[in-house]
Image 1 (cartoon, rainbow, N blue to C red):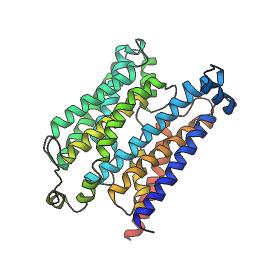
Image 2: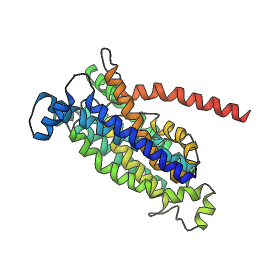
Image 3: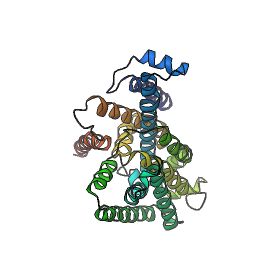
Amino acid sequence: MKPAHQTMLLNVMLLAGVMGLFVTSLMWGETRIMFSHALADLLAGRHTAGAIIVERLRLPRTLLAILVGGTLGLSGAVLQGYLRNPLADPGILGVSGGAALGAVSVFYTGLMQVSIAALPLGGLTGALCAAAVLMGLVGRGGTLVLLLAGAALSSFAAALTTLVLNLVPSPYASFEIMHWLMGSLTDRTFTHVWICLPGVVCGTLLMLSSGRALDALTLGEDVAASLGFQLHGPRGVQTRIVLGAALAVGSCVAVSGAIGFVGLVVPHLLRPLVGFQPSRLLLPSFLGGSLLLLLADMVVRLVAVGPELQLGVLTALVGAPVFFARVIMLKRTVS
């Protein structure tokens, strides 16, 4: 089978899996309902208990799982392709740390009491500020400058977040902060979806536009430049990738907290299936990330005994062994 046909088949299979889990996520949960009746009531505008559960609890949570998982998978594939580094993930830019700092600051100042949108808006503000600082630091610098600037920004944001945690006077506020930082989609509403959606759409389009340039970069920056791709500058590939990843990932972290390993593991699992071509990896990584996070979110809902397991904890518990297995496979290949 030709690589293009193989990629198309992979995309169809992943999309079918996402659609299947989307419906399953709406049907199953802690509260048992007759889904067909709830859906009929929802479409008819009747505010029954089942319709309210589907519309206000399960549907926004499911949509966010698709958006957040897809964004993390796509940004991981783009950054790994641009940096030519299989260990690159969305957290490498420091924007996740900025979003966490913004959200923690909302907890610290008590703005949580003002509106349900205060927390995600605070996280989004922190992400945008971090993105602006990152763009200012990188300028026309190359990949090494980007890596150093991202590492410095991540460390600084983590230090400030720890400082805020240290200064929080209430142990209950500290618990809420730590709970949020572990990542979750519990109790999310359509307010969170609308806050997240614009940044995800804009960032995703910017990252997808870099596919052909990523293919050229596999041959080196000099070859990519000779093929007509502008790598640096305000309209360069690096600017589109950094700005796109910052907007999309920052918007997601602002509403879900930190969810790790999705952007690192998904591209690794799918890369051999697309012939190791970066541009063909982008859409499968988005669909694969959505599929993984939908599945993980269903697991934390359906197997919960007592307090619900945080989604970020589960992805780390699953992602780390998968990555260990990948390391062992590579080790055997080299030896």
